[in-house]
Image (cartoon, rainbow, N blue to C red):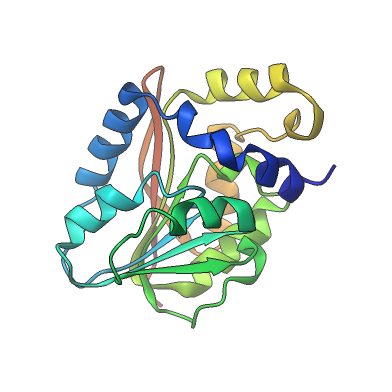
Length: 199
């Protein structure tokens, strides 16, 4: 089974994984990002749209959100929730984001970064669409160690989908012309923010 098929199968029951504790964690992360009305936000691996209500609230009806996922079934679940017109959906791979260079203020990878097969290329592609001083956010509702253990315990196709350690992550982010401005890894959450260095 390929990864896309794996997530297609999980889509109908995916929202059952979203406990109130996880949603509170995600809400807090989004509030801390300093999102302003008018921002162009890219939600990578948007899934069934867990982050969308929080992003919509921060934008206050002004701006644009592109919910990107490679799973048609995940996007189908999100579309059924009838989000406002500032939300646009795109079925695409992170290695080929269908957006122009320098067009995004904020790109968020919530619970998806470990699943990128080629993390170096993925971060470079994200950096391409970010504006100068735009930010990449990588977040999870648990620590790196807990997440990696979870994927290894699930096994199968996600067994080796792991978060790199801090030094590896800093290296691949630097290769893409980004600079880490925040790094948090604790049992309650994992949060990395990196900024595109103006050239």
